Image (cartoon, rainbow, N blue to C red):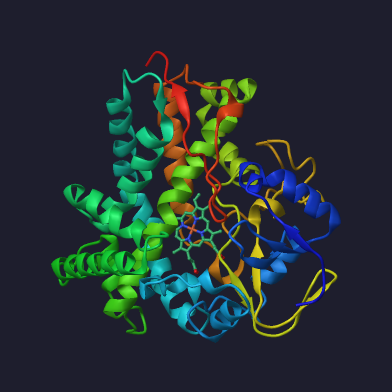
Amino acid sequence: MTTDSVHRLSGEFFQNPHAVYRELNAKGPAHRVEFPSGMNAWLVTGYDLAKEVLTDPSISKDLYGPPGEAAQINGNAALRLDPPVNDHMLYCDPPRHTRLRKIAMRALSSSTIREFTPRIEQIAASLLDAMAGQEPVDLLRAYAYPFSVSVICELIGIRASDRNEFQDWLTTQVSTADVAEKYAAAANFEEYVHRLCEERRGTGGSDLISELMSPADDGDRLDQRELVGMVNVILLGSQETVAGLIGNAVLTMLCQPRLLGDLRRDPDLIPAFLEETLRFESSGNVATPRFTTAPVHLGKHTVGSGQIVLVAPAAANRDPDRFDSPDDMDPSRPDNRHLAFGYGIHRCPGSSMARTESRIALTHLLSRCPDLSLAVDVEELKWQPSLISRGLLSLPVRLGRS
Ligand code: HEM
């Protein structure tokens, strides 16, 4: 690492990362930072440099291989996610990544989403039925989270009666629980996914597990360990992100009465509003870690091998060199090519699904609750202290007349 000065981020960073990013972007597109957890890394905040890093083959995602090990040795011991059920497509490089991704893309195709859309509509409607009369209500706990969890669990085929226990295993294995507890949760998770696969094998079903189990055009298929990793990354990649985006979109519109009025009058404006929300306040803050495998230039800095590089789409999406008036929410913004879904070979394969889900969730909410309003002052809202997610801890609202 060069002798560049270190920017130490405090806990306040999570409450308002945009203020920090504004300051950093004014200085340059890359910065040496230390996070409150003690992790040290290079943080990329500029839009053009973010795209360069996300497409640089010398910057690796191989967390469980030598690139990830080198970064741990360089003072980031807590980086690796145990247990290895997390060793999946998001944390590997080509050629392994290429074959895993091909199978994931097929399983999350537009025809899968189209077929499932009527069921997504029903899930939104029945959650709103259940919320009627609750006043005030935490929109995240009562609507956004159960919605995103139900959609993906149903698509995968996890029975409603198993979901609570299954969710516990899923979140425990990536939590800060002790290692024994994490391994026990991962073992239960793996066993459950194996059972699901056995139930589906040979049924010719069109559900996600059956798609993931069937061979690719060239005959390649996932082995059991890869299948478990794939289910894991799809579940982890889709729940918090979609729920967070719905929460952030609702907060944004409730803070802008004119925009709220326009969206109520004309629900066809919702997709453009959501696209701008993805730029303005997406549910992702920083993308997952990358590792240098050779010296690279990040802006004016030369960074040695074995360093962690973190790209922040939340910062790049408000880079004033790329977007005019970046801190304004403007659904009619032209050329809104934000990086909320990443860029390059790891770009989110669930982006169409995420857009469909959030459009349906907002459309149903607005049509059912035209008087929706915040139940607290906006200053009282707290954000998750998370580097990866940008989502509220709770969003108390009044539903008004239904
Ligand atoms: C608003 C919702 C979502 C956002 C903002 C989002 C964002 C992202 C981003 C930024 C990445 C790239 C991470 C990196 O390069 O470090 C990613 C990857 C991924 N996402 Fe999403 N995502 C969302 C929804 C979903 C959904 C609904 C699914 C699945 C149904 C999904 C599955 C995945 C998977 C499997 C990857 C890994 C891709 C790879 O490594 O090639 N995501 N997502």
